[in-house]
View 1 (tube, rainbow, N blue to C red):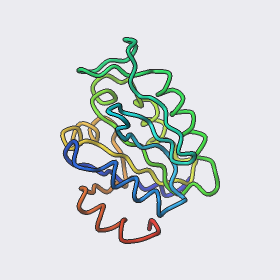
View 2: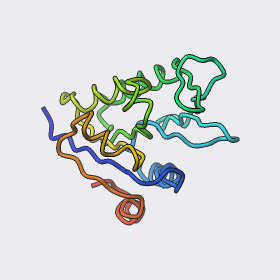
View 3: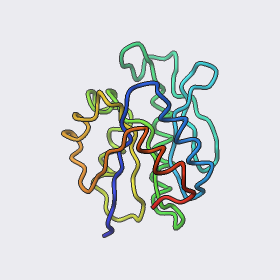
View 4: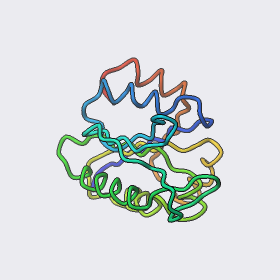
Length: 167
């Protein structure tokens, strides 16, 4: 059993949460997980450990919310990478960018991963979730994280981008 700490970066949509996380990743090699940058107008999963990019969107109708159609196979692949990262010795913090309506309202996307991460206490990594401000309350009610701290983007930037280590 470990003293798992959960951090939640929560702010408005489209204000630079992923961009700030990309800067943090560059100065902190112990970070693992994934980011979701826009690449040529398409949302991608960026695997932190390898800097590989996996397309998030698809034209197939296998995982749809709003105007977005996501590739379930990509979500499954990313989830396997995250679960493997949990047990690596140098894995201090796992970033999950981001949890939103797909998980919270539809129990799809990374819903099962969030449950495993929050309920699993047999790993030594802190968790860093990105949750859109409009979804934050529902995220907390649904997943019931304990020992968590919420940061907005300004607080995150002040705390982590002025340091080279996550403490």
